[in-house]
Length: 174
Image (cartoon, rainbow, N blue to C red):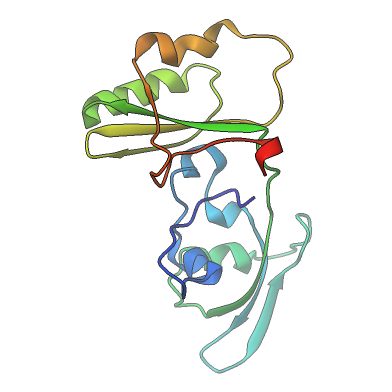
């Protein structure tokens, strides 16, 4: 899976366009920026020259890392023709919780939950609703006492099945 969540702007949207725009999505605070996952690129500059930067593996850059510079450049440095991107394994389980609250309360709760070892992998606030995504990369070996910290401090409702950020997935459902 992609370590970032670019928005989908329609059928003509491209991954190169999302990289050039620097749009990482709600997972950015936990996984990092797009530029951290770009390994290599093939770019066409303004003189119609095709340039190759980086590689296809993580440890393949000597000198300036131009591939990472292209992320967020809005196409001013060249047209991205090809990309090599580092991907992450699918989570074992993923769930999105929704909380009705004001923006200031949402920021306060996210800061509070950030201090706990919760598997938070994304958040978004819209229309007085905070959406919090939890994803487990591996099954826990023993139960943690702080796992219920989010549930005990707030009342939550499961996300509606038709909403864009609603998901509750396990590896067996893929």
